[in-house]
Length: 366
Ligand SMILES: [Zn+2]
Image (tube, rainbow, N blue to C red; front, side, top):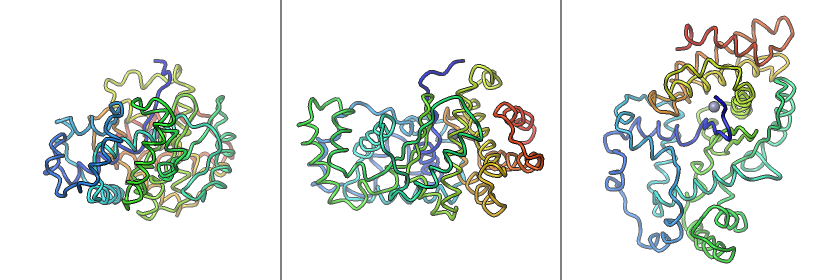
């Protein structure tokens, strides 16, 4: 099975969906959501709606999850991380300018922008991860030695508040706009709305993505890092964990033809779960290894905590990433592998790590 121009969505909409489903299931029933809102949009915000409702239909995974009756019926426990995400969304929903269309419009613009952006980057809202990113990228290149160009784009909420960038986004991705002049006009109206809202676009929700593309692109959103820090994860661990998890997906792309265990899995949910848990396992291996991030036990415990927290219970979703217990087990086994192998002082190849994962996947993780 050859993947061409594929995406792997690691965080973002899926986890948000998980968080919403965990607590609001009674009042939240997919499309009926609009009518259950406990607040009212002020009339002034209506005046702006013409500036964002006419974009092309969104390919938003969250809508797909919310319209799936089977998924909505699944039981869910909310982790601390889920609660943080829920808090973000509650802040958004109670904002006088909240509108689902606007949220989707902005999320989609920011996601597409970071997907196609090429150029200078910074990581963290104020570039606070720039040095760490440089170091980790250099380390991971050597550690896994993959035969492909890998680049990392940072996703920020501030891009939606920057006149030139917002205009670029609108001009490139909003099909209702014909030229730059029209894009400026639309951007200026939206910036006016931004100025009046405390959440739009500052809410971390707008930079919550982490994903990988088969062309070597990795994306890490500031909002995701922020949400992990909010549950007590060390910031360096949070960044390194996401980066090394995403990096492993590149190893999977590179070995797509050869690593065929996944091809026999019957459903997309099982394929997704396998890829994600393997990435958790390999990230733990790298983070623990003496020639990797060399994290001590305390930091690795943070990673275990993170892994548990980002589990989801959308077990029949095509986007399922593994439950909390499974993600924790994968991380612990990756740690154990490094702990046993590092005494010998060598780094296992991606192939060997893949084999080691296959040995424990069915018996110790599922
Ligand atoms: Zn992933």
